Amino acid sequence: MITSQEPPMPPDTEILKALAAIIRRVMDDPEVTITRETQAIDVKGWDSLSHTFLLIEVERSFKIRFPLDAMITLGNVGDLADMISRALAARHSK
Image (cartoon, rainbow, N blue to C red; front, side, top):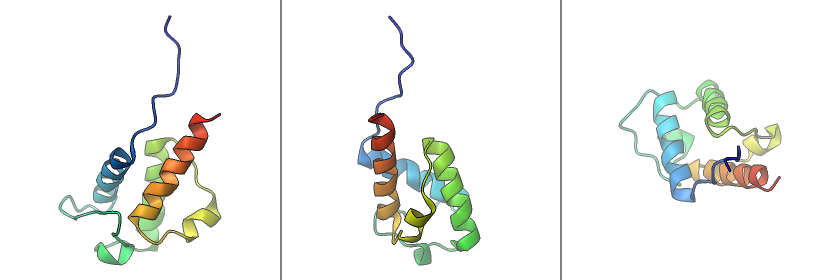
C-alpha cells in the first residue's frame, strides 16, 4: 500500500551540502567554499538583504519556517544547519 509520507530527514552532511548549494546560488558565487565555520563576513556580498533572501530560500527549499528570534542568534553556517536539522526533526515528530 502506498502512503503519502514525508521523505526521511536528511543526515547532517546532506543538510550542509544542500545549504552550501543554496548559499552559492543566492550569493551568485559557485566557487565559494562553505563549511560549518563559514560566517557571513567570509562570503563576498553576504549582507543583510542577501541574508534575508538566503533564509527565505532555505525555508522554501527545506519546507520549514524559522521563528524570527532564532535567526538573530545565527553565528555561522553550522548554526544555520543545526537550526534546519531541529526544524526538520520537529516537523517529522508531528
